[in-house]
Image 1: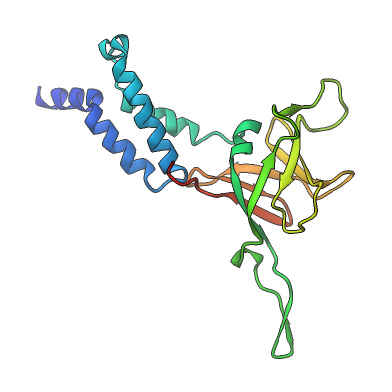
Image 2 (image 1 turned 135 degrees about the vertical axis):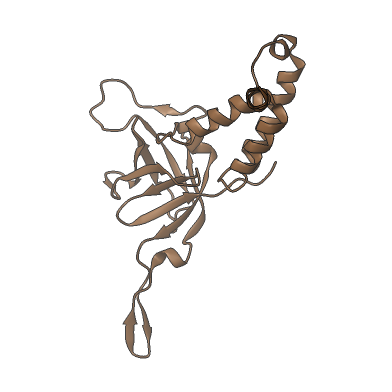
Length: 200
């Protein structure tokens, strides 16, 4: 029938699924990198005779892979290391206006747009098995508004993260996914959101 033929075309049309991916991703965090990577992988896919002969529709498969990845709530240390975060306090500094003390939301102004969770070594520093600490990974945090060197970060397998100067660390935070597929870190004092990478 016409309807079944149309559905078959939709299921196997690279053009249809490529456009669907573009429309779905263009308003999401990480669009430029996601799109560039998909285009590059599509070129590799087309160069492979075995892939071309298969019944795999590259862009359809890519669409559902990204939909699944968008539900992921944990982040790897390597992925975290590649991101730069915008740092904002929940509560701003008190100011005096017309003789009154006014406290505005700290979310109105960035305290730093250069937060990085780096490694202490070339490879991610994995904590040795049998340690009594709660974390599995650690590294150096740079770009903090306090401007003091020596801030470290610590993260476990569930993406619970904490940072500060040992042993007096700031409160633990949670790494979570935003509705637009970006990454966000929250603790009782601050919220940090990953800055969308620019096109390469």
